[in-house]
Length: 154
Image (cartoon, rainbow, N blue to C red; front, top):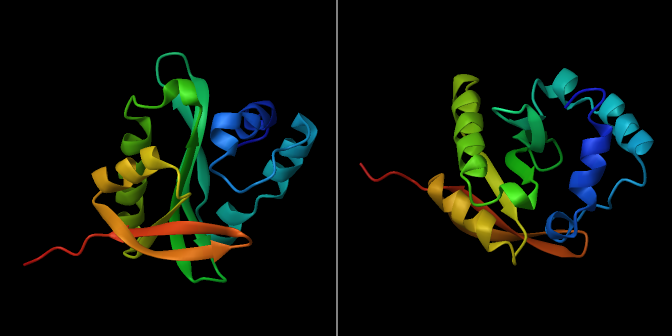
């Protein structure tokens, strides 16, 4: 994400159909979102983070995705958020595949996805990416379903 994406980030994170699955508080204003973007140091510190997703033909922002490193857990997490009007069109799967390809090119082999238990659409996306349910993890008061890549049988 880049400077100027704050207004979109507010709209995305305040959308009730998105918000229900995040566990995050929505931004109170586009200024607060811009401050978040300005302070987001994952690119500088870890060389990765969430990227803006744009609708190809119109260059309209529709969500974000990317690999994020969680130092506390020592894990790489594939995450995304997309506006509901773009759900069920393959964007999450396409972005997920691109992120996994990028991660592989950087030598990252162990990646998880953390999914809200009622987010069946993200569960299906993870399965399309060849991930499977592995275990539950609590962040705060919310239990998250953690998916890991399936182990290939030789």
